[in-house]
Image 1: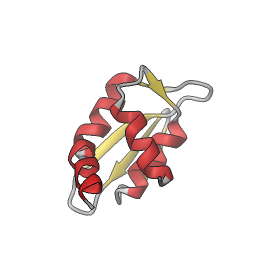
Image 2: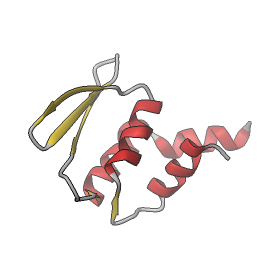
Image 3: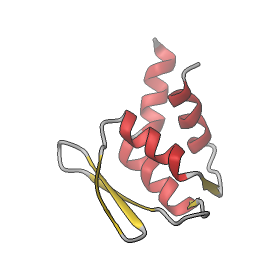
Length: 86
């Protein structure tokens, strides 16, 4: 099982919080590169215009509300379903 698939499964398990590095890895794997990092927030933008803002505070984890937003914008449930069909 790939690292990305493991992270997707983790995010779909509805965790209370996650490491910023894991969120960043998943966003970048789904072609959402980091475009702006100002203050305590980082913005990721897809080529089609979709954007996701994620807080990055030293020593703190990303909260559940942002995890849910990432799951929705990346359509992770559908992606996982497609992966299991292959």
